[in-house]
Image (tube, rainbow, N blue to C red):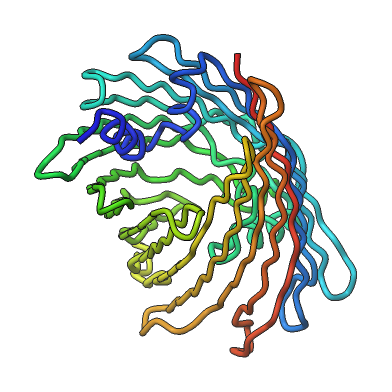
Length: 370
């Protein structure tokens, strides 16, 4: 097992390290920015008719030395929602800022991570803005920004990776503590929310198979009680299995992947009422076609969501996505990646019938190193 393969899997397990952090090991420092826009239109049957987001991300990665790397990022975003009657609401401003430190206790084998969520985003929302926040937090449809602010939090993590009989096997764990913040601007409602502490464990396996690579992973998250509106809320545990395979096929590199997020039912401790269960499944494929120094990157992904309110899981929606990006090398230290994506599917509305939607998004990401 090569040191490079073990380190790549270690970065995945560390959780707090961005993929860009690994690339910056040989580049010193890197600045990441760009712009992304997404707009979706819904058929009649939902509270929202059209939802759009415009986002400018800004981030930086710095490999301080061979053992220590730092990164941070935030986003300037604007999200708006229009209802069937034509009334609209908007949330705009900075999101929270994430800062991370990765320290290789033993290079390529043991890594320690420390990350902080800095509350630079918006948390106190008006009633119309809360409706917008509820729409962009939808798990089935991945909006560029799903939350403008979640208050302060600190996460520590430790990951270990070792080779075993041709496999790179990794075990990682993290613990997050969060502070209290307000969800609404109304003084008539006790809207103070304190998320419970989260413990996350991850086990992963990675190996070469022929000319390709197989990766398997399982993540488990457990939460202490949330506190909101004077009562305790027990979130359900989360289980996330993942699998991927990539290999050269017909002159291009092809990656096929799948993951499933299962959220068990929790309870409101005051009423003992169960919260929703959820199961979100995704299957996808992506390709990389080399053209000189540049790359075409097509993708297709299918998602299906199930939810329940104390009973059996029932279908809640689907999404089919097609995307294409083009990675262009612009000089020795800059990469531009423009992209387009089309989404279509349906969401089960309050009446129990499916509501169709469709949307287009465009993006340009920029990475500069020095």
